[in-house]
Length: 135
Image (cartoon, rainbow, N blue to C red):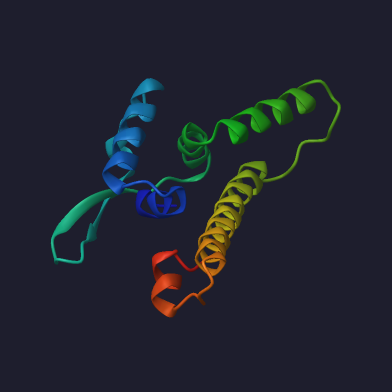
């Protein structure tokens, strides 16, 4: 997953995501340049981004979500204590849960915004739906 995708899914500006990636990788003594790539921005300029595989991606994503981080710790403890069997690709399952949760949150916010508009007695227009962030 790229830092651009993380920014969109987390609802955070890309420069902030990039800063968090650099900070988090530095904290575990990993050179962020190992994952650096480039993309072409809308204005045609080449800009840097990051491409994070597996465990590095999970490390960064858990910096955004305390519930996800805690559920990973609980899962690890359960596996370590023999309560559950290890799950193949558990990192991918947690990433999928985080992404789906984000989609569900966006859908709920959208529905709330449309409900507010309709409570005023008028029907939500396509413009209202666009401003509400149609999922």
